[in-house]
Picture 1: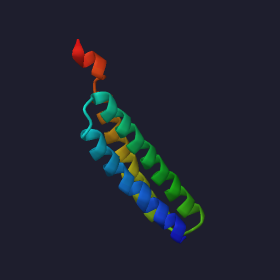
Picture 2: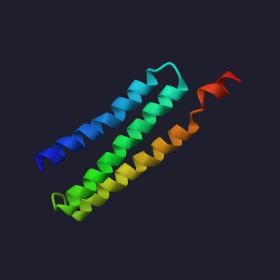
Picture 3: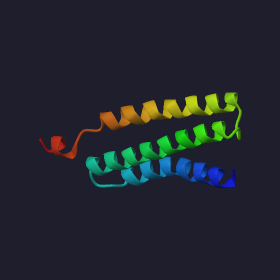
Picture 4: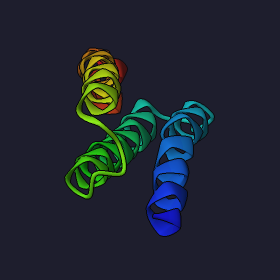
Length: 92
């Protein structure tokens, strides 16, 4: 249980950390890449929530609430990634 909690925390912290790191990059391509890494971390959190539910570490309601929140973050992040133009198209 403690290993899973630790992994959820690391994955969750990785999401905004990668967004921030990508924002500090010099190109939109780099930013987009870091946003995609953040998305991967979000998918890790979702998977770890599923595991937590299957192992009965969290109840169904807690899982549903957290999972729905994560899906909203996923939708926002996807729209943000899609809105970033490629660096090459910015030069034109």
